[in-house]
Image (tube, rainbow, N blue to C red; front, side, top):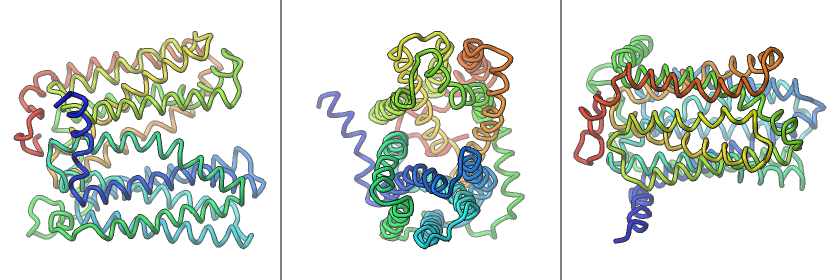
Length: 432
């Protein structure tokens, strides 16, 4: 068998498991709906006469809903049936989007309705993704988890960033934002029907605590267990510390200042900025597919850290680009390396974290990684008044490699990955 055939078979192998195929289909549908909401929300706010401030309020409500409840979402994923949680989230989303559609179609919708919808949409994600992450290792053998996480990494940039917004934009232009929101509600309805066909297996519905026969511990105790495990586990603790610092140093310049690089350095407009983001999205999809179709690396912690370090290093050159192709190349490489690292990380959590803790650790990862994102974006603007864009992007590009090397050494990643090899299917699904 050729190497290409072997890679393709490895990529599609998880779909041989019926329940995973159904769960993955619901993920794709939900991600598509989220991409539609990103556009429908903007134009519904504008139809109400809102501007940047009003858009920011709705977007912030979604972020608040996610960050405020993601830790609780992880606890519930370890406490109750993950299968029922993902179905409940889709049902809640159906009700929310249906109500928003009715309000919009009847012309009585107000800004606060959209703020509430945004908050509840973010809250839904806070419960859906920890339960989804906890379900994967219960549905798939360890050797198929890399391909499954690669699919998720591919779906996000393609479906959420491109296809979903494109379809919503067509509906908004052809009919109205309300009809695009109705399309979102239909997506969640389809996802419910798909999820309800997943088999009722004990491992999907069993509580996640260590002793399923015992009564579930209190919520605060479960949270302490998750935090305690994170602090005791070197590779996990140092990766999250690295992640916090890395996200804080590059996400603000990337989200807030990159448009000014496009306009001031390249003389570009919104179309060129869109192309720039498209190259980052394409890189993410390529990186996810590449790692998903490969064998799990033996030096997984080192490869993951190297990808995140080397991938951000070219950002140091962003302030000096004078041609669009240079910026496209930097963001394509950034997208590829970031996605490879993320897929390895997601698979690593599912294979080394004990199953009864996976929901909580996934939510802690989510929370810690995103906690400083709003602060980074808030600081980026004022910082640009004190420093040049070139200097800011140099810091953004160099900080991650420096702190990544520190985390790699302090966490003893090289020794840890050799003591806990994951390149064989014979290895246990959860090691510390």
